[in-house]
Length: 398
Ligand code: NAI
Ligand code: MG
Image (cartoon, rainbow, N blue to C red; front, side, top):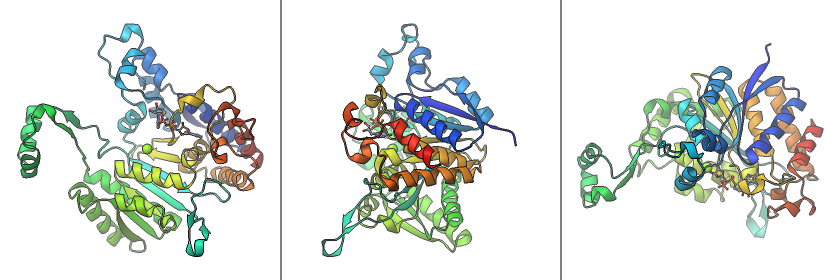
């Protein structure tokens, strides 16, 4: 079989560090691939006025599979002030390139597994009966709609007249907000389309069926957000009834789900939600299994096959310049394993995941976050493993 070409997009800060570590693991595990580097991130905003250059889009169009580190985003005025002098008066506006990638390629399916590892000192524990300590095993996979909803970017401050007039035709808008001068209004929309709502629901049910999860939980708020969450719930019930009768459909509200997070996280399996609630639920569950050093994700478009795999953490600029890197590479390595599964290299993915689990269970090599230290350069002399040492331990376990 022809060798794969993977577009590696390191981005900024620790994204550059952890991506190289993941590639080192992939190589050592025997994954045969060529890599091409895709430019993305803050440097390209500053130099070229575009954090997501067209050449990077072309690379992904051609090769279809991307491994992404993390990017740095900064507020509007910082973005403008750091822009190269010759670009400053061109009216350029910074936009997050990772959101740009999701929208450009319609990467509407986002999958974020949150599984606890045996022996991870960061695992959630709670008090049980008779003051006992319980450490529930968590195996939750969040399916987040990745392109619509509250993050769709359809929003206005001081909306145009047509939009304002359209809003005024809604009795509730007129009654409750009609008093507000148009100039003082900000509106962010929450748009769900039936097509993409159905796609994320089906992806969640299909995953539950394939991997033997007994339930799919829709985590929205249909009793209040009646149109969008309501549509999602109606579709979920219909899909479950006709196509997945063997899988239970549970319905939780996002606020209650956040409370139940610490009460009974072990009861949940696959969770499916719109863009923002999926984002919230996945950070919530990630907190129970070790936080950002362990939170991986996949995002893809089932029509084109294009997929981008990334840790959910950002570029952690404060750790980026360390001579010896201290950050945890596991989230990035897990994301690379999600890529392998996606391209049917399941055996290599399983081998790597087994090595990761073994290193965590053995407990000899732990990055600073796993030792509950404050991230500073001196964590290494205090016994924390460096990023490279953690990777080396995983590679040794292969
Ligand atoms: P962050 O995820 O970069 O870091 C938050 C904190 O989490 C860090 O200070 C560190 O304590 C910890 N952390 C993150 N990754 C870790 C790892 N691998 N191992 C151990 N500890 C880790 O989020 P923050 O500080 O809010 O944002 C920093 C920059 O990253 C911003 O410019 C932000 O816009 C960007 N960002 C980019 C994302 C992406 O590329 N997908 C996602 C989130 C933030
Ligand atoms: Mg988030």
